[in-house]
Length: 102
Image: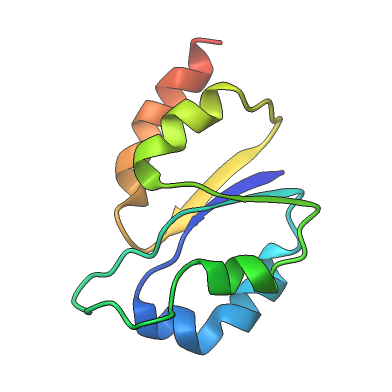
C-alpha cells in the first residue's frame, strides 16, 4: 500500500513527529507532502522532514503538493490512500481521474 500524507499544523508536526513516523512506517511506501499550515506561522526547523526521518517505511519520498500528480504518473501501486487535515481532499478527484486513465 502506498500512502500520501499531508501533515497539518507546525505545532502538531513538532509535537507528534515521532508518533506520525511510527504509524506511517506500516505502509509499503510513503509519499509525504509539506505541512499544511492553517492558522499558524512556520516554526523554524519544523518541516515534514521530522516525520520523514522518524518513518521507517521501506520506501519513502518527500514531494511538494504541486508536484504530486506528476510524481504519481510514474508510480504503480495496487492500493493508494491519501489522508491529512489540510487541503489534500482537493487532490482526490485529479488523482482518481489520472489513475482511471491508465
